[in-house]
Length: 129
Image 1 (cartoon, one colour):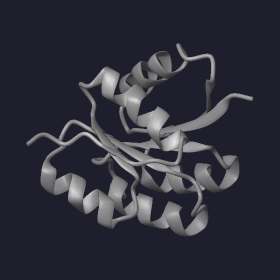
Image 2: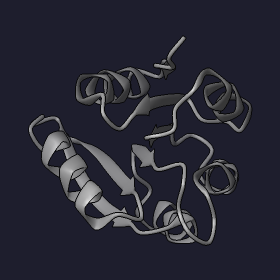
Image 3: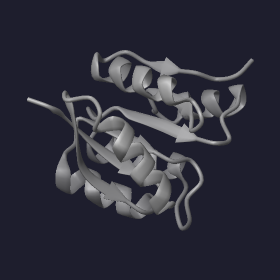
Image 4: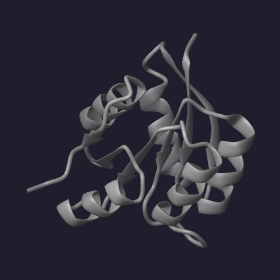
């Protein structure tokens, strides 16, 4: 059975890019999309995905705040932050917020490796030095 992934990003084009990339793997399926942090929380509870890919900077509620709420609502669901603003500091903040991984949006191969790692119940933080 394919792993069910929820994509949360405020940019519709980025959601489509992520969807296209992830759907190349026959073991993964996109079960839903969210356009902001609050939508991500609602969809996480409703869809019960196996993994959530969450943007950091979204309107209304950012990815870190959404991740904290999602972790309370569906604590066994791993969350992978995918952001243009990844730094060592942000990766540390993400870890302390309960995220299990973080990758840069421009790192296509890192995204796939991160998804694989989190689905294996591992962590994956690809922060620059």
